[in-house]
Image (cartoon, rainbow, N blue to C red):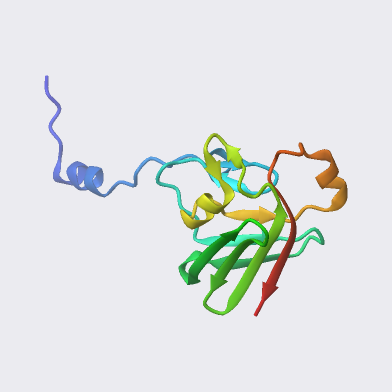
Length: 138
């Protein structure tokens, strides 16, 4: 016997909410120097700059006008009303697989970057990327 759907059942099926996707914790990978969104369609709205002091500043990716990588200077991000410099070592080395920090930033897949102190830097593999200084100029 076939069950007939009422008009209300049909409307409910059309307006029902989609199944909840994975939580942020399941799609975000913590790589010590930064976070990486794993999903192909995942994009961050803002980029958090986490300082070794515990302070955090977040700037919207929508305001990012230009990004530069210079092997001697690091990564410079030009936002509408701020310039952010990320200095460190091995910033061009892959984080995971073929994903590099600069590439992840320009693709909006890096939701946060973390400044590391000297003690933490000494514990990290010497070939791994590490941010030793974040400078924000207004």
